[in-house]
Image (cartoon, rainbow, N blue to C red; front, side, top):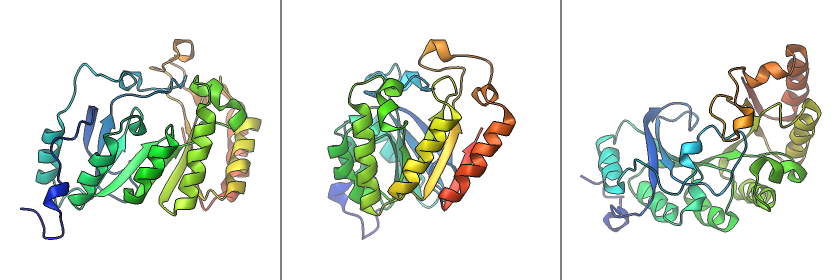
Length: 249
């Protein structure tokens, strides 16, 4: 039974959101909240280190019906606190807007994992989002080479500005593959983000086994491409720039 605070008209079971997967329960995808993750199918970007290439096509071999996800969420009321829309890239789909409205109407908090590929849509959904995990791909002058789409870096940084202006809680993160960058560039990126007012920042080392760019695939972990002492020095230099900083290897 719906709570009185919920609008029945906003509980939409016919949203045409393309979903490529779901994580029923997680504690790490929305800080301090028990959440489930809905992986939106499709991405317009072609990031070289992408480790979920199966989510890039707009259509998946296996898809999840939205009405089934709504039934699942109803059953998890009282256990789950939040629903996270991840990808792929959620902003690729116009159906993200009613999907978020539906989840909010069910009294769940909403998390969003995005690189901000569609700034106008990002601006539209931000008022209904409680937390954003935002992917900063690289410095603006290098972003298109990472993403492999012309103009993508501009969208990435434009959306970051929107996020910082919105007041919505967030965490910025950058995936690092040492074949695509270097410690000096990572340090400059951190300095640039800190100067823009970013307070929470994660650096995460790329997973090598299933990268979209097959030339980057390796059984060797990416972090081992830069010696431990250099990595520690980099971490020590970056940490004081932010209120919260985490290095994930």
